[in-house]
Image: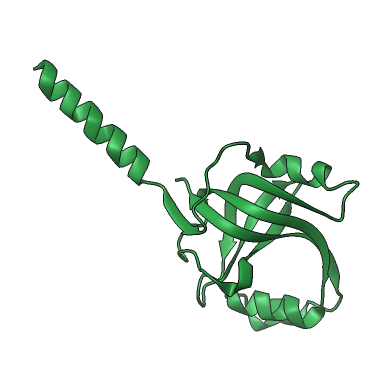
Length: 148
């Protein structure tokens, strides 16, 4: 009976570890800050190299070539992947990720916003409501771990 319990515990541990998926460079979650802490870390910097843990709020439905992460206060951070070198699954909205790379604040043009809205599957009416450039928190990821 004892060996059966050890076997079950080992199987649970292995499945919990293998539940993580890696994309891009293989990274760890060591020293990752929460996504809600990131805006404060960028207050005095134009960009910062960091690791961030947060919840995915959206993914490009065309290819998985970008995602958005909740940074609190009803705001999202746009995450792109370095050199367009990898993609993430299109069905990870609501899951937790750890990303490593460069966080920065940038201005996004109307055309780029409309393109992203189209990739996200928004309606033509929603897309046409985009009429002004916006400043947003962005992230260029070297690697991504999908935690859960």
